Image (cartoon, rainbow, N blue to C red; front, top):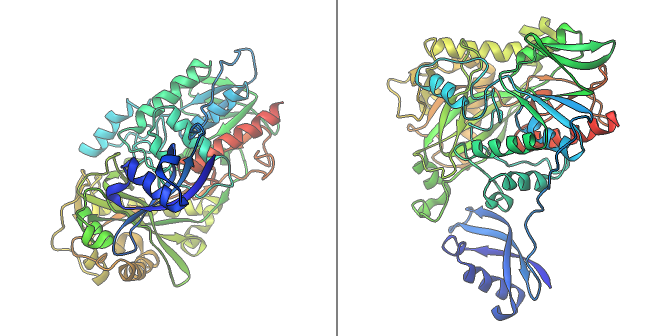
Length: 517
């Protein structure tokens, strides 16, 4: 017999199986001896009360074998003579699309403009230490995509897009900790995710899939209104269909589609700053008197409010993490955050962003579907110039940003390229700056102490999602104009994160399989 029960467990007892069993027995009004096992299905931390407590959902087993948390997928090699599909991009959408094609008996040909996941590290070191941006290999481009070296958070609300449990199970199958299957806010960490990406690559190759690194798509092979393949430099790849999973920063792909008069759409996105606090301060706000309890994880937050007619919210919060330069061009500055699996660094950072759309894009209206992209690009160039035309970031103390004064000095930061005191409002303009100020004051009411002289505001957080959408039919998932072209993931404008992109890659492969029969 299996019964599901909800329990509240103190932090000091969450790892004690006997304490959890005792709580389950009490909840079910039965004896501990009648319980063979208690399996935690879901776990979240509730820190709203005087004492933080874990809320768990558990399966209680009596005279029955414990069921596995996930069912592994047993991949079989695909015959080389079968149909094949090109996948442009090896981020989560591309990799999970490839795995799904193998399940369907179709050969995936993955083309990645950047380097493999380990070689990327040399270019990340270059941009961090020397401010040198490799336009093809950076925090956004390369095997694994943008999430590989910028945190690896797996939280998603996209349960209607597909089987989230399967995606998490596949990550565990390839080396992730089983904790991601039960944690309400699963996180792998930028130190562990590269090995998992390598393992996924080995699965694809072992099943006769192909992966080509340093292979940037430079043109499309089109015949009337049908895609027949792609061109990379002087080499062509032909296939029965193409999945375009190039990510939210591959601007050249949008321009390539535009040159072929392929339909694109401008879309709203969000832009703002990264805010960095001492982790100890966030702990004290969230955990109150329990801030130094070593049994509690580094505290996080999720904030949202309405500032006039626009939304302001926290994005990609990284407890115990650091800030990184995520630019994809040498004359632009983009910031992101990351955390390793232990989340034990002394700083906490998050994007605090403002929803932007047509009012902000109006000066760029002549660029039509590229108006949001042009707006994004101009802000990134402004941040680069404000930082001294290096990867140094313009920054202000949060209190100085709110008071419209230049910071006389700046607190310590995790951002390796360094910071330069500069009035952030001059980078962002009045619309975003005013909304951020409004939002910060509202956030301080929810988290008293959030506005602090120790908090640092850095510009610019601009790659929350794509400013361009590649349209597709809701049912066939194919581009409405080009047969055989399947836009997928964040770069298509239909996903926003590792899990949602992976789901989008899977369902795109299902649509491809139906298309090619």
